[in-house]
Length: 328
Image 1 (cartoon, rainbow, N blue to C red):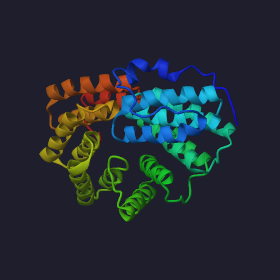
Image 2 (image 1 turned 90 degrees about the horizontal axis):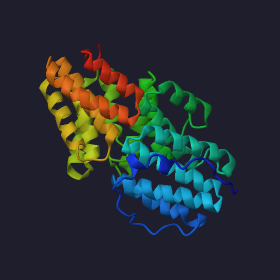
Image 3 (image 1 turned 120 degrees about the horizontal axis):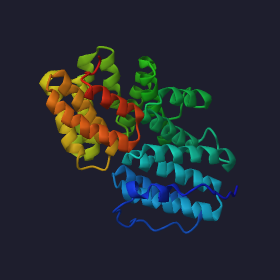
Image 4 (image 1 turned 45 degrees about the vertical axis):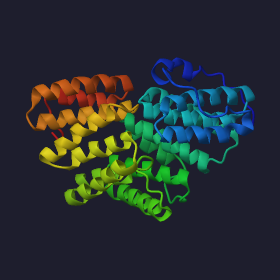
């Protein structure tokens, strides 16, 4: 189906944050609507390598091409991919706006509402809502769609299962969350494609296990992820694993991991992950009664959380800045 997309250009509106200083896209531009899948797959590889500003700029070109060609299916894919890049860059309002634009267009695109494109888009819509702290809305989205039951093991559905596992866990359903996360682990192990930078199921499961009091199992899982990312992972994947290790490990070992997470993430484009690391470290410093240092760290974390547009992370940063500690 052809369609003209008249909505304001989100790439232009958010350009100062997301594509500033981006180098040229190292992929041949799409020659037309039929060439968009090839182009967007290449951009996804750039995103997975944390070349996010370049991927975002490329996605904006894909939006323009799809709009010019009048292809709703192409716009769905382009907006969906740009939503993912924006979320990883820490521009959460732009990520949600693009994801919802894609969802609106999916309904008129002729795409299978239970197919791979819809599954990938649903995972992205849920993920950005979780980052915003909107668990209730994410839960409603899952309940209203066709992806609440068993899912195939194709890549897009496995990504959805991972995000669904996180949602179950954050919504107070740890058993269902662990079932989804462990299933992801089994499938990537069977494929010999266990890459924590793309599917960090261990650290997500470790948070659930720690919440259930299974500290030893949680520490073991997240230590495996840290070791994997140290060997052959992106700095952002290592930083995320260390941030969660800081929450799972007690005492000085946890503090050391949290401090390293902040240092590692400092050189990455993942602003929201860096903001979360700063806020988590500030909470741990509060627990250790190191209030002056905690306030300095939390000022930086609060500023970055506000720039990312996450009300939940902003609220947590303010709570810690007022002197509260995690779990209190």
